[in-house]
Image 1 (cartoon, rainbow, N blue to C red):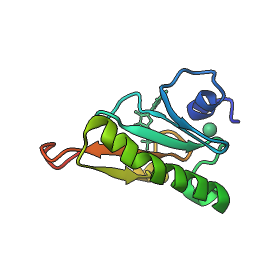
Image 2 (cartoon, rainbow, N blue to C red):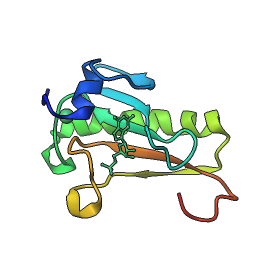
Image 3 (spheres, rainbow, N blue to C red):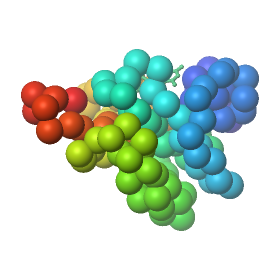
Length: 114
Ligand code: 5GP
Ligand code: ZN
């Protein structure tokens, strides 16, 4: 737990979030500023900044959650597909330094950009 990390504070229940999935290692919740309806973030419960910092077993847990969740998120909002992505490092646009995967639902008529 990193005191000044918003995702750690969400994991800890100190900040509210619309949680859509939880297991021992992973929490998934709706993005506060969604790029599309159903935009979901998947985070390891432990604090690691980037994918490279994440131990392999926790990476597997994050991937397993993405694998399970992505079709459910798509179905929930009637999406035709989704972008599943990590912004890894500040240079790549990572604003929250707690590793997280985005599931961004996509629609045939969304203009080609999330
Ligand atoms: P990044 O740019 O780091 O890959 O993405 C961070 C994401 O976290 C952004 O899509 C942003 O909207 C989302 N976000 C930032 N602060 C909060 C928050 O307090 N709650 C939730 N649910 N999402 C947040
Ligand atoms: Zn954190």
